[in-house]
Image (cartoon, rainbow, N blue to C red; front, side, top):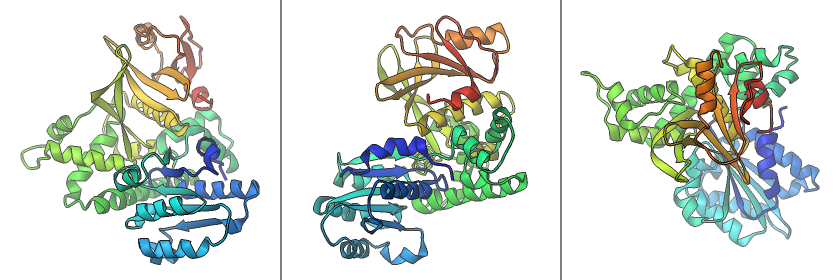
Length: 400
């Protein structure tokens, strides 16, 4: 089993905290497995199993607890006695009005609460209102490349890291996909995961009455991962004489897609003015496997795909990520984690002097002294002017 250390290291300091730990991520990314790993660490630290309650609300055995009053009565009965109780609720969004139940336990009992859900709206709406200032948010992604390497090693895969990178770029990091060796099986499983996410976490949750229009927007957004897009541009690209999609509808769909953790919309940050810009965001799909299913570009595909997996890798390691806007251009990423900060430029290959000058020159208007990296698939080290060049495999396997 792959220990999700990138996630666990972020959550571990708060195991005994009264702050509510909210863990979100796309369906089938490994949230349930992460909760089981948290339980194992709690037990290893000396917590008795009797003090730990785990409920998976997608398990039919717990179907009667998807009512707030029933859940309250069940937990109330189970948590008699003094001492700290550890409550782990998996896919909590299936419980109507769960927010007030969770807040009641937090306010009246000695508890440490962990919530997971396949919808980022766990962090908004009534939960944010009722529990304002009392939640900590964490994100679970499909396997990053380092976890993928570990998983394949456990499967006795003897291919090199470079060879496995090509597999990862093609099929992504969903655990159910990673365990398969046959490409046909990977395709079937990946397609089923995609269909399940779209149906359960987008169409059904938002009561969408035009699923065909949604699928067109979703395919366009995923296929253009790492590209600057807007609702107006998508509406224009997808509308013709027979089918029209309005800009307001597109913006609604993008919000639903974000809520389901399928894609992230990433803001630009004005490096000189030190402020976020509320326009020209980029969108990144959560897994290269989904990109494979919906890609619609022929040229420059690998550059966009590499940028996407670098973004996802940073998010999986707990970084906040922005697009860097300079006076005359941009830097692919600004990554921040606590006091850490660095800039990152991603290219497929630094194949000629023009490309080298372009990628390294992206940092020329940034006066500060935070580390600056250019990442590519080149094996030759091209570090210059204090800007560090890294091979993509080396970067993905590092702690940055």
